[in-house]
Picture 1 (spheres, helix red, strand yellow):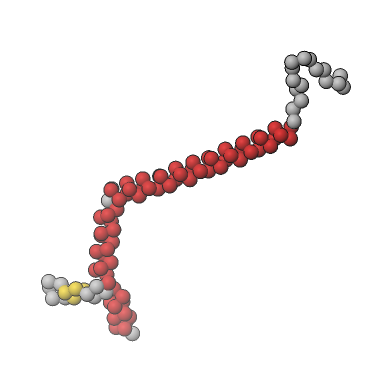
Picture 2 (cartoon, one colour):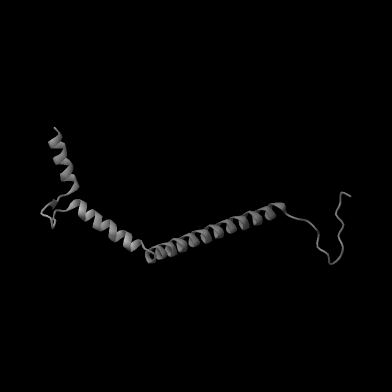
Length: 100
């Protein structure tokens, strides 16, 4: 039992476990790297498509509305009824001054 039997034309069943574990380890690392690259590429594509879809579905109007609101809050404008619109920061300063 202590000695391996050899038969002509048959290779011995000697398995080098060190080499086997190295091959498995390297294969696992390669698979992990490929999966990480795939996930990264998928996330980038998803973000591109998401940005494109949101631009097509109404975000331009939201941006335009926000810009109009900001201009109204920060600019001076004469109204039809003879009043004036002033920037909100200036209006708050005047209110604080009048309250004191």
